[in-house]
Length: 533
Image (cartoon, rainbow, N blue to C red):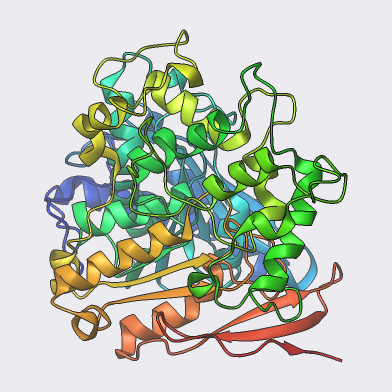
């Protein structure tokens, strides 16, 4: 009889007791295996080995045991049949920041790959699940690192496929791949990670958290609605709650409206600094940052060239002004009617429109992601590689996308998550060039409406909006990141004390802090930037 780990899990998962052992014989054999491998072997180690060496050997043996029996120790997880492909000790970081962990590679059938990292010492009894980016296909262990350094066990998954590029072909005529990407992969790899944590440490995580930005932010919001008991708390950075519209056609729209009849780009990237400077002046920027773009009504006409020099190098032509005005507004159909309720961009984001503009006339970064989504994932029947940006019909295709919208989009009704005791922190930059900040704010207001008002929502959900910050990273002033909220979220979950302030920081390349700004939950305004020296 082979020892089995994880003949466990009866869904739905509860936070109080995630695992119920139903195979006593199998569990007993696992304990015997781990006990045998953890006993000092005098013939190998010898009497002069230090306690640290003994602990290292013990950790290595316990780690290797996770992948024993051909990696099928976890194949009986209900709803998450799991196989381990490797489990080895690795070290990340250097010097005092070095962390040794048991790194576990595996997958949940059919193809939801994951990496779990288990600190061999100083585990804080918590688990962090990390989100992905773009269309998935890769692990973002760099985002796990801050949590690993705090003692968290971590798990990252690649959303059902392995492809670090922005290629949606993995889902071509493959409904299972669509589902894994949309919601299943994050859930089942979390189930697997909790079982692995339990097997390695002998106890389940005391708290489990999710952290992600961009696509990872969407994953977190979807988890809160679909699987409200998976996590005690969720950090959702610049998310795409309206994935089917923002990814489906927002980036394609800004590409299409920025081409003339010959396919040439109208508003080119060399004019973005001019437009940006005009926005800063109009909106009363301080230290190069617009503090309240939500209430600044910027008209790019102020940057238009004079009649005597209509195509000057230091101003915008009339055609470029027309395009810029559309960039600041909602997506519109051929009749000029708004088909989204949110503005695509805010004043102050102009320098990062390089991800929305391709000077050569082809798809931009944002438009290209949308094109991949539309070709292989968005519609009930995938149109495939023949589908181009000009193929998208803004009069009829948005309605066609609604058939699968509920599969990808987040649901603002989070009552089950609130009732389970979950806490949600959302955050975004006001200068986000990829995820419209206005859509983030509107989604949070929808959470409030579903919760019964702002006060009820604030008992379990908060939104932090950062002036000048771009998509997930970078910007004109002090910035936040998803890991910035780790301690705030844990305090909220464990003590009930909701976060009132998050401190954004700006640093030099060497890490020296040059400026800070205190950010309060929306709709409270941020405090002025404080420059350091």
